[in-house]
Amino acid sequence: MKWLIKPVLLIIVWIAVSELLIWANPPNWRPVRNPEFFRICVMDNNKPKMIVLSERKPHQTLCTETHFQADNYPLRFDLKYLSQENMWELTTSNDSLSDPHIYRYRVDNQQITPLAYTYGGMMNRMILYMAGAVLVAIIWICVKDILTKKRKQAN
Image 1 (cartoon, one colour):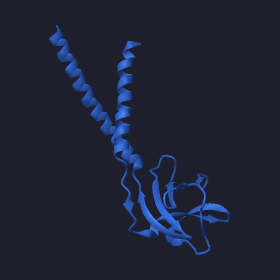
Image 2: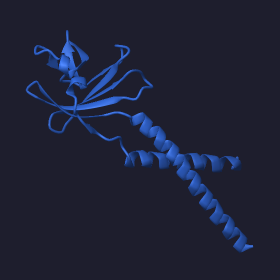
Image 3: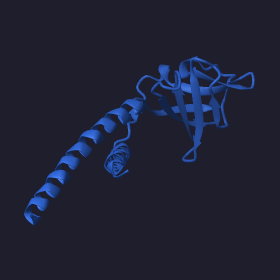
Image 4: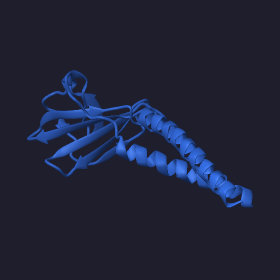
């Protein structure tokens, strides 16, 4: 059972370092330059529906509640209300493994102001987990080298 301590400790340190890197390096929010492709949530026959901002008709009302919809394959979405200044966040993905696109917009009297969007969060996590593995390997080699030198000095 003693042989299991080092690999488990190494995995725990790897996960901790990787999560710290992810926390320190979130995906960048990009300004909206092309609002034709910006997605929003509207109510269509009392059901939430995700559409592109340029396709919105004047009679369509915006979603005003938090929604999660996964039954309209291939697109699923998650709408959250952010309490700051009437801001909404719409997370869209093609399936459970796809990289989500996240759109933030402000709603004032049924008028939509696109604020920012981001994507690449899953790729960002994967790259940072690989960087965490390299960093932990370097730390492991350094610690092992220091301990070996101290043992040689003690003998």
